[in-house]
Length: 399
Image 1 (cartoon, rainbow, N blue to C red):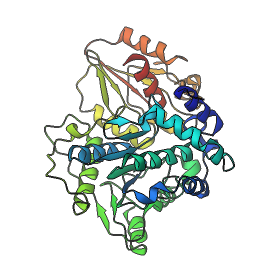
Image 2: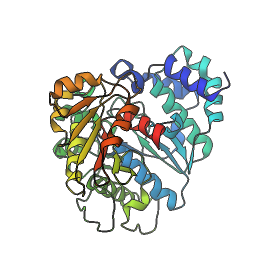
Image 3: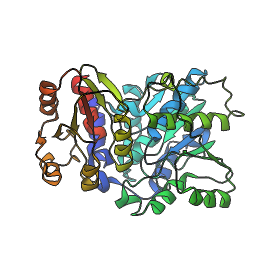
């Protein structure tokens, strides 16, 4: 198998992927990732890392850190998930995504060796990232957990700093049905004698303090200031900026960088987070897919100038749909739709549960987009949200 597309499609099918299958693909165990990394000579033991977990904001904090260290002259590896359009987005070194050739070669070299272990898609991808970072001779690597922390495949690394960005109710069926249980799962990335940084608005600070004390991990809290007049970013991204900036201060002795200007918009390149893709009407994409993120979106909408709001929404099946629907901002019309991902919930279910007249159903996200574009005027705002998969489809199809 020499074709990149065939290899990625095979891996998605051969090994269960949370992006495709959800809960069925989750493996609450680190034995597989230890075994496959042992086969490839444990590249993770030869690398330096910053490890980032959290309900929301972890991808953005990773992106800020990647860009800060990149601009400071370091060779930086970045491992995040999920991807929006192309699998290669997950693994980046410098300014380049992992090459198709490297993925194909890694697949060929390790298919038979991994076969007995039967790793999950994410375990395979994590090993691929570690191998690529070692071969690329990176100086620092920013690693985002896939899900949770304690039992996440990335949690076999020994980082220079552990970061937990925020705690909210998401993936409760996997991580626990209380905020305290979820906090403890995220806290699983805290390591002995390694400093820990919390985002500024984590209310479960006492849980983390107790765990940090038991592990002799110095605990830091990010600053709360969100007043950056020159910034065009939403407030929730300023919070993520504060977390990333604090991280660089904590690690200043290990990774020296010059003074960072408080211009966060110059250090953010991540897609799908309050991403403005059109004007007249203003069109914004945001992957907000849980209670915490929808609340932040509503806060940000109050700061925008527009006449009428039109909302295109699609969720995954494993979400608390009733809660999310009740939290949605007030809009002129709700366009319920679905992404191309098999985890997407039927938009007819969304309409039934929402039970209001100003909602319409489009089983094809493209038709939903065309539909809203026909009625939205120049002074209106179109917000597309609810799922990373929906945002990925929209970006791939239209932008």
